[in-house]
Image (cartoon, rainbow, N blue to C red):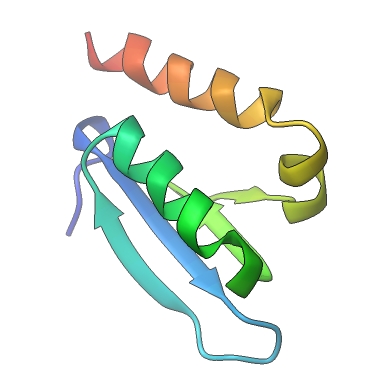
Length: 75
């Protein structure tokens, strides 16, 4: 079980593939994960919030805002 206040729970999947999940502790780990794996992912959810891949690729501002809000909530 993960604690929402201490990290990021990612669920991701390839189209028609089996969903996988991972737990990342920092914002840097999340951005590195997305940078390295975004081409192989068709569905992504961070802490039960579904992220639209097309919007993420074309405009990363929503993800940046989410990660900053998450950091503010951690303080």
